[in-house]
Every structure is written in C-alpha cells, then in structure tokens.
Image (cartoon, rainbow, N blue to C red; front, side, top):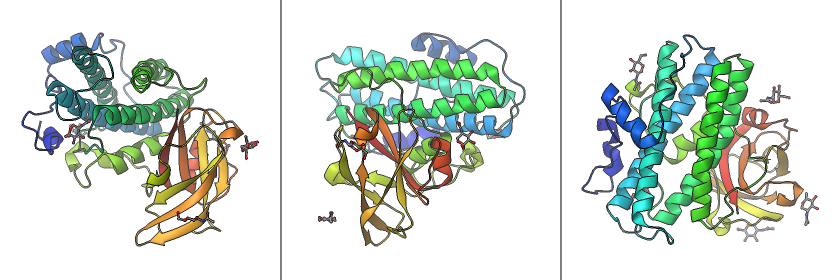
Length: 347
Ligand SMILES: *[C@@H]1O[C@H](CO)[C@@H](O)[C@H](O)[C@H]1NC(C)=O
Ligand SMILES: *[C@@H]1O[C@H](CO)[C@@H](O)[C@H](O)[C@H]1NC(C)=O
Ligand SMILES: *[C@@H]1O[C@H](CO)[C@@H](O)[C@H](O)[C@H]1NC(C)=O
Ligand SMILES: *[C@@H]1O[C@H](CO)[C@@H](O)[C@H](O)[C@H]1NC(C)=O
Ligand SMILES: *[C@@H]1O[C@H](CO)[C@@H](O)[C@H](O)[C@H]1NC(C)=O
C-alpha cells in the first residue's frame, strides 16, 4: 500500500486507496473486485511465452492501468468525501456517480491485474505503481481529463492489437478488443457529462505505446517516484520532451486555425522542426512551425491546425518532429518525435 500513499499528498485525511488489496489481491479479494466490476478475469489459458515487443506492449498497458487505478481511486475518494469542487455532478446524483466510479475502479484494477497475470505467466517482469499527481481540482476538469487520457488509451490499444496480431499472439487480440469496448463505454459517459455527443467520430484516433507511456510519465508520475521494484524501468520507449497547447488557446475549435504550443525542447528551429498531427485513421498531417520564441528551458511556437483537412472530432495527437515526413502512420511519427504527445480535444 505504501506506493499509493502519495494519493493523499493533498493532505486529505482519508486515504484514497484502491479496493481490496490491489495490486496484489488475495483470491478472496479478486472475487470481491470481480463482484464490483460486473464480471470476472478471463479464465482461458494464459500465454507461457511472449515475443519481446508483445511483452513490452503489455508492460506499457500495465503501467497505464496502474495510473488509472490511482486516478479513479483519487476521484472516488474526492466524490465520496464531498471534497471542495467535487459536489456538483451536472444533474446526476452523488450515489450514481459513486457507484459508477466504484465499478470503473474495479474494472481498471482487473485490467492491471490481468495484464500482470499474462506477463507473469510468460515469465516477464510485472509492473507496479509509482506515485502520481493529478492536475485537476474539480469534478468537471477531472472528467475532461479522464476523457482525454481514455481517448489516448483507445488509440494505443489499437496499436497493441497490431503488435499482438503481427506477433501471432492471437488470443490477446480479442481480449484487447474487449478492453477497447469497455474503455469506450466509459468515455461515452465522460462525454455525456461534458454535454458532448456520446461518440466523437466514426474512426477514433490511432496511437502507439510510446505516446501513451510518455503522456503518463510527463503528466502524472511524480518525478523519480518509481522505485526499482516497480519494474517501470524495463519499459524502454524513448523519453520525449513535453508538448502542450499554450493556455491562450486551450479550447481549439473544429475549424482551420493557428495553435500556439509550449515545449520543453528549447533547441527547436523553424527550419528543422515540424508538427505532425494524428487524427482519426488518416495519414498523419505535417505542418511547419513558425513564430518560435525561446524562454529559458522552454520554447513556444505556432503551427497551423488544419482541422478542415479531414480531422476527426475527439482527440488529435500532436508531435514535434524532426523531419517533414511524409509519415505513413502513428508509429512512423513516433520514430521522428522529439516532443509529445500534445493532446488536443475538439468537441
Ligand atoms: C482529488 O482532490 C485533490 C484535492 O483537491 C486533488 O489534488 C486531486 O487532483 C483530486 N483527484 C482527482 C482525480 O480529481
Ligand atoms: C518486478 O519484477 C520482479 C522480477 O520478475 C518481480 O519479482 C516483482 O514482483 C516485480 N514487481 C512488481 C511490482 O510487479
Ligand atoms: C507571434 O507570437 C506573439 C506572442 O504570442 C504574438 O504576439 C505575435 O502576434 C505573433 N506573430 C505572428 C506574426 O503571428
Ligand atoms: C482547411 O485547411 C485545409 C488544408 O490546408 C484545406 O484543404 C481546406 O480547404 C481548409 N478549409 C477551410 C474551410 O478553409
Ligand atoms: C507504419 O508504416 C510503416 C512504414 O510504411 C510500416 O513499415 C509499418 O508496418 C506501419 N505500421 C502499422 C502499424 O501499420
């Protein structure tokens, strides 16, 4: 339980601990989690070996689920205890929100336990928790953030399916599909709470593990809080610099516009760097950067955001890249990425 102590870094008196002995629940506690989650862990045989990229993909999934468990534990704690900012649910009742969050938390716990069970069965290192920080202080912002990281997960799991399929680990392809559906059910609710249409676009935005892990690492993991025993260090994806929308335009519209970004990559140059956008299932779109201004170890710049070039509502992923491509897909963008992922939500 020690690793979750940071969830109460805010000084709240009541611990925001996950349910029932997570991340190592006893058999009796697994039954309790399953009961809350509405279903069981799969009882089909687990793989006894995995190719390295399949193992790495599961380790990234497990690291992400560990973060999600911490996030929903904290959110459930805030709502249950009527923490300031967590008392207005936009028309629905506290009881319904608490029951929904308990179910989502239990489901995320089983996703994490399940990913680790597959890793353990295949003789690979399982993944533990770090300490996390959440840049939100009220229910609406917490739901908007949950929707954004869930969108990123929905893209990342597409990439996971491609990895498992090309590795011939076919049993995991359908399993991941079932998780995509579950996460999408969650996201429909997060969108309705924000008064958005329940489903954003016909084909959701693609992503890959390196973007998902960098997002969790940059935004949510307390720096240097992952102990060696968490095995997070076996995840060997490149560490990108950060890329975020500047505050001046944090709510971009569904139309062509110019966006201003902030990055921790301060050596960027107008001639050597570009922005690549990944939206829907389309080929990534690359645009030059302009109006670069450096300020210590940060820089800001502008780039066109050509939404009208066929972008999807929901999530668009931006990356600061070192070539103008062209890029065939999200994994080719990752190969040239210096900073990212920048997460842009439209409607
Ligand atoms: C829960 O509330 C605390 C205190 O306001 C805040 O720091 C934390 O980010 C909140 N967690 C979530 C997931 O909203
Ligand atoms: C990290 O890997 C070791 C060796 O495989 C394992 O014993 C340990 O339980 C793992 N840690 C976590 C948090 O899963
Ligand atoms: C460049 O950015 C600055 C700071 O945001 C802004 O004031 C200025 O209008 C921009 N210049 C151009 C040419 O877009
Ligand atoms: C938006 O930009 C795209 C690509 O640059 C262009 O094809 C499209 O015509 C533009 N749409 C509008 C409404 O200006
Ligand atoms: C992405 O594009 C590259 C280069 O064309 C290709 O080799 C790779 O198979 C593609 N990956 C996926 C997941 O489609």
